[in-house]
Image (cartoon, rainbow, N blue to C red; front, side, top):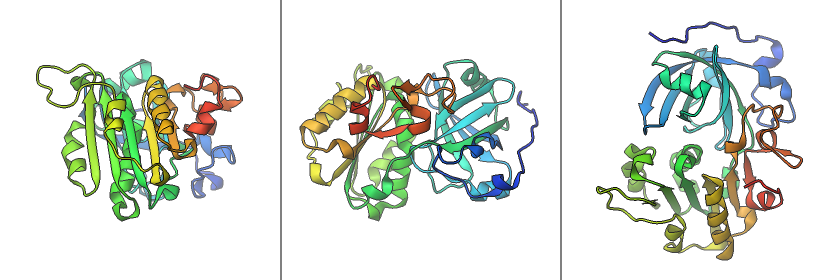
Length: 302
């Protein structure tokens, strides 16, 4: 039996029944809206990460809930607190979310002890998003390191769901060790889709590893990239941002066509704790998605 069965009410004020607003700063009255939800399934990915498949309980709320690739939600575990988590699922599945969560603190520790059927709260969606509309009719380079594949999954699903709208797609993914690879059960599926090239690399191979070894920038060097027709999305640790984005700029990709997600800095998701503050910018309020030009002008952003 689940340890989380606390019940709590969702606000029914008239304004809360209006369509969701994707501009976080324009209408902050939506930040306190809590959708009651339940954990449908838990998929064990690695020793530290699990994927939670979550469904909003109210059918009417499920029908109207939507998000854009790159956005995040605040996930509440009653009695423990809440955390910001990037959405890892297809935007086409209204009211159903997949959240990849690493065990790293009190709230995530409680989630890793949770069972199927546990009740949770969801606020959002919040934040900026990857400009998928602008990317249509262009080639895409999707680069992820480690846990960065979690936020990259939403744009991957968006491309798969609307495959004719995009050109060639290259997905590059790297981790330190093979045991840290996420979503390995989907690699074959992604690799079978026309004009999607998936390449995976690890820094420290184990005896059973037969793929490439090294840094993820080595994979980029093997690609033929037309910088005038390419958009890039980069998700992962800050050290990877620097090397990958620098390499892309060197081969001619515009900084305005390179997008990164800085969700790793976020904590409260409301601009109150100041942990994600970079100069006058709050990652949770102005991001988490930024183009590389904006990041280069934010001191200590990466």
